[in-house]
Each structure stands twice: as structure tokens, then as C-alpha cells.
Image (cartoon, rainbow, N blue to C red; front, side):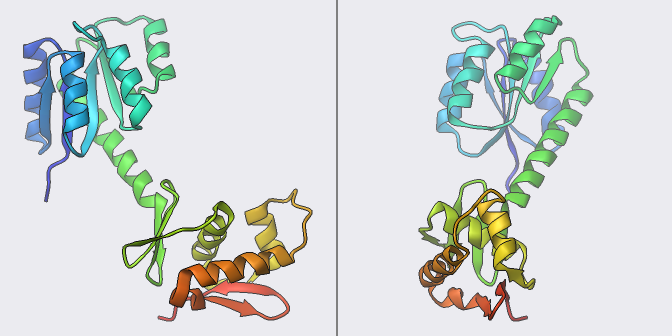
Length: 226
């Protein structure tokens, strides 16, 4: 199994070694940067960095600048390290998208515990964002639907409709209930718009379209035969 990769950014060699040693003992792969410029080079060139531990005070490019640039491209978890303990610095960190804020000096064991907690939350969140049924895979965060690893192009409403069906598979759903949940309660259009969207959705899903069953006089049910 591939090790989880963590980027540690600090201009103090001893601090990087301390953090690296403790993380390595827990089975993490650690890559190091001694300043912000080197950190961004690694960020762009290394694949699958799971988390960044970032010092604030660094030469060339400080932690705030690094964080701002990371956030332009990624939601990767970031833990900020700082020798300062002022509230305004913590507030700035959270405004810029910091996940955790740890003041030096700190216990390496506490840092490792924070790392593990954040990665656990991140992995749980990613797992919840992907649902599948009957060979259809939906990535809710990326807004992508795949069948046999092929991306299916859906409109925004078709995507929401399919997601609602899959999340409620095996349940008979009335047109009113579908309207309320997919088109929201303030929609005043004709319920027949659902039939139109279902027809298009079935067509785009090809053979998988048969999983959306019509319940005459009521609505629809997404059903996968066991």
C-alpha cells in the first residue's frame, strides 16, 4: 500500500527533521522544503501530496504567501506552524483556509495526532462524496458521472436528478417529491419537466437507463436487481 505523502515546509533544518522523524514513525512519507519557493516547486511537481505542514516565517516567500497560492489551486489540508501566539495571526490563517494552527514550541506527538485527525476527516469526506449503484459511479464533489470508467456528460439538473435517484434507490418517488428535492420547493413549473429530464437521462445512460423504473400514475424508482 502506498504511503500517505506529507510536505513539511520550514526554514529550520532541526525543526523539519523533528517533524519528519515523528511522522515517518507513523508510516508517512515526508518530503521537505526549506523555503516557500521550494515548497511551491514541490507542490506543483510532486503527485498526491495529502497534507502540508507550513511554517509562517520563512525567507523568499513566507507561509501566508505559500498558503494563498496553494488555495488558488487546491483544498489540500494545511497545518500552519508559527512562533507567534497572537490571535490576529490565527484569525488570518483561518481566513486564508488553514485547517489547523499550532504555535511553537509544540509537542510532536500532538502534531502527529492533529495530522491523523485531519487526514481521517478528509478521507471520510472524500468517501462520502462518491456513491455508486448498478455500475454507475457518481463523484458529487467533482460533479462527474462514470459508467465503465467512461464519463457521461450530463446537465446540472440531470446530474442532480440521477444523484437523488441513486441516493434513494429502491424507494418509490412521487413527481412532487422529486420536484421538492431536486427543483426545490419554490419551483412553480409543470411536473412534466421531470418526465422530460428522465427521458433525456435514460438516453444518456444507455443500458443503465433501464434502472430508472416508471411507476405509472406516481413517479419513478431507481432499482438495481440484486
